[in-house]
Image 1 (cartoon, rainbow, N blue to C red):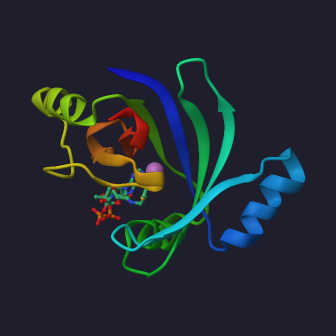
Image 2: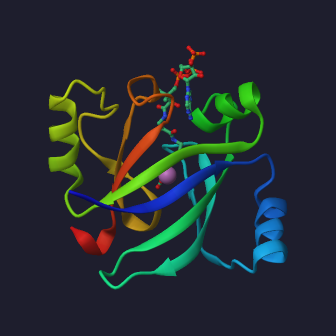
Length: 142
Ligand code: V0V
Ligand code: CO
């Protein structure tokens, strides 16, 4: 069951400058940074709130580490902006399987490693009315 908006992924050309914009404009601080070579991103998670069920919402700022990555290709075509939304679930395997059964393309056979030790998969944007949609189970959730 999808229980929250886990994060909104935002593609940017310069991670440090974008982090500084969110800090100076809204007061959001960096909660976590990492490089995910498999996904081809350097990312910063800005934690917006904690919720009573232990979940949280984040902005995920994404800078490509290579031009042929998903974010690199998207930036070249569209420029900076919202790249994906991510719904949180305690069981990404089950939700991905259920959604695949409804005829939506799930991009990975098995969830892969996401930010902060999470497990993630993606739904094809062409099957989701133009929105690249991620499903994520946080490390502590599984
Ligand atoms: C592509 N399209 C999008 C899109 N990316 N539409 C909406 N939102 C996006 N972000 C559209 C694009 O305009 C094309 O439409 C069509 O899909 C095919 O796109 P393409 O440019 O030819 O690119 P593809 O097919 O090579 O790749 C698109 C997919 C790719 C979605 C398959 O981006 C992908 O595998 N994404 C999942 C992985 C990912 O995004 N990783 C980065 C975040 P037209 O022109 O044909 O109409 S990593 C992350 O979130 C982490 C680590 C985390 O949360 O922990
Ligand atoms: Co994401």
